Figure 1 (cartoon, rainbow, N blue to C red):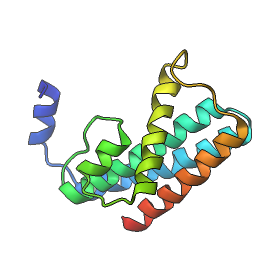
Figure 2 (figure 1 turned 30 degrees about the horizontal axis):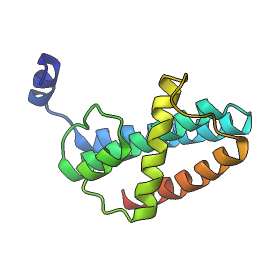
Figure 3 (figure 1 turned 90 degrees about the vertical axis):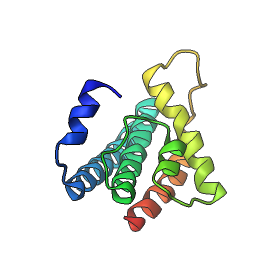
Length: 137
């Protein structure tokens, strides 16, 4: 644990504000993801879709654990830490979306670029999980 993390733990934090912060950011990033995909910016759109899912999972973490969300990006790990019970389909979607976090940050040599049709399918599945997570908050 770093010095900053130690300081944060001693500051009183309004968890309901944290949840609202992560949820609002998630909803905005999901909208941006859809706009980017619609304009043909596949890599960036899928990166923002991952980011939206990450923020929503952090809202769940705050709600469940009543503490500040961890600084990690792995969607499957965040869902586990938040205590969410996801079926295999949702877990598969989160695992696949993890690839777009890496691809968005380090675009050379990791993942083959998605076609427009593949991106639409990823977004359809991601949006289903996203909407399910919103309903759970």
